[in-house]
Amino acid sequence: MLNTYPDYYKNFSCIADKCPDTCCAGWEIVVDEESHEKYKALKCRYAEKIRSLISVDSDGDRVFTPCGNRCPFLLDSGLCEMYIELGHDFLCRTCRQFPRHETYFGARKETGLSLSCPEAARIITESPEPITFTTEEIHADIMPTAIDPTLYFTLIETRKTAINILQNRKFSIDKRIAAFLELSAGIQSLIRKNKLSEVKEICKNDYLGTDYEIGSHSGKKRVLAKYFNDFRSLEMLDKSWAHSLDTAENSTPASPVGYEWEYEHLMVYFVFRYLMTAAFDGDLLSKAKFAAVSYIIIRHLQAKNSDDKSARITAMQKYSKEVEHSQLNMDKILLLIKKSRYYSIDNLINILSEE
Ligand code: SF4
Image 1: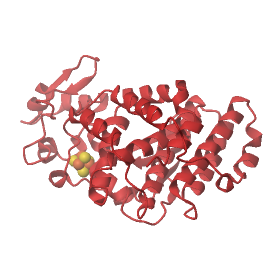
Image 2: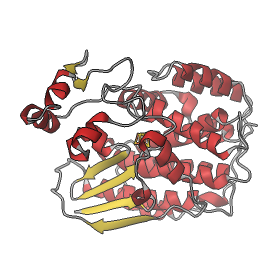
Image 3: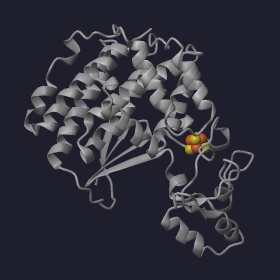
């Protein structure tokens, strides 16, 4: 099997008690079947405690019964009691994997780090150098997935072109995002018309040579209000998130000047993580628009302390934790983006640089 991952991937290791946040609070941890079997068979003094702390939640998922909003194994020191008692191999799948994410496309797999972990966010935005990727052969079982190979290779070509556009530093980040949106709209139209043989041609278009009306939208306040309302309508992990969105909506967004490469990495992160998932539903454009609207919201969230790199990265991480980490939220926001004319390419491009 071939595995593709961003080159920063291997730099990650959990910083545990030094983590400024924790992935062991705020959400329920689902116990997968394999780990549950392991816990049932476990014979040691600690086994009874694990078994007593597993319950079924209102969605019917088997979870570690939260203590307040924390995992019951999270110690005050910030360390994991189960890890200390039994070691890494006994953690359930969620805890062993987080913040790593993986997606299978038949005989190919893609692996990355989620921005919702503060250490992953730090690593993703650490180096100003353009993000690069590695593909290597690994020994793993092939996961059968129902994807159309022609669409899959179309998306590979599209993503390569999209990343080249987003990493072209001769142009402002706003212009690169506008060009990326136009590319995505063009490819989506070919997918809809079933004309995938024309993708190579359309990828050669000079998207960066085009003039876009960036920041010239007369109704941008109304459009922005709609975006913020949509994000406010999502399920919230942390109650203070609503307040962060309110403050952000009324703030002038952080200027990208001086650290445009952080936004370039942010966009490449979204593109790497989501564009290929259009292989499952044929909807490339909503994923591209999600990346663009995330950039817009994040720049607003960064308005406060925008000179401070760690505050900028924390804003990205919090956004990811609230929005991306919940599949329910992702499904809802992608549907809103797909259905609402407020997320038209014109609106998104015109609002990119609204300072
Ligand atoms: S959020 Fe990341 S760094 Fe923090 S405890 Fe979880 S995996 Fe470790």
